[in-house]
Length: 394
Image (cartoon, rainbow, N blue to C red; front, side):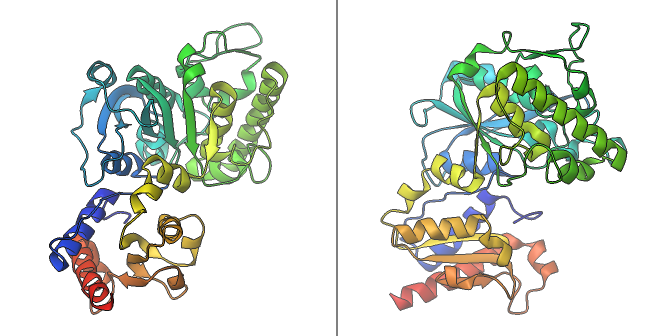
């Protein structure tokens, strides 16, 4: 519920509504996300994990403290841990593994997000993904060997080179000099040599999954520069310069590393971060909703349930394109479980047929303004009514 409640808060409000209507119900809280804003908080809550923090550089190279999550085995009905542990402390204390190895979840926006850059300073020729690479290193320091990376809201168009530098990759110019630390989009054209021999060796045993829900290639009219750079402060002239830099980077990677990143669907996401992580960290690009549903073990948690309740801020025709409620309803249906959707607003074109019932916060005299004032209370009331109706029907 964007700009009002995070996924764990929504789950808690739904749970309260269920328990008011049916006090002896067993409720498994499983906050969900799609790789965008709120992914770390949702996944930490869904698995009973913990927040960690690391000192990193923001897109302009300024020091900040950013957080990421270290997950535990899915436990349900658990709330986020306390903020403030460092990666070193987490590694020393240890955490329950997921799938045989520690799993971390990172949001690129925490270190390299557009909201970290004042409007007047947004310039993808300068901004760098270096801080995101630092978070990946911090996650490995904490013992993670599986990393889920949400890439929404980035400020960069550097082809992931800044992140790669933080992970030890060196980029040299034609004079054999190392390119500026925290390489931005404006420095890509100066790359003459890519040296991966200095890359963090732990990457060889670490699987990075990029939660990616777009299919844009790295370059071309649908690429990172043409489509996404204007949203990050690029002028028409800057877009041309960034396109040339990304094309040059792709050529260097193809010639020196033998990897063709230019036409991979999704490689242009987050200013080409996907392309860079494929080339420099053997990352994979995966649908964010599916990746996170699998990571929190949602199919297994749905098995044997009597009812599933999901929701989002606005349910409309666009929800059919990979949004969380549709994915949850589909998974529940595969387990023979009906789904109720609680949405802030339900549009006329909403796919109501995908759910047993759909309930809107903005209904029955509740205005959008009132819904924004206390959404948790209204979610609880709508859920309570839905559960009472469900109990009468079974």
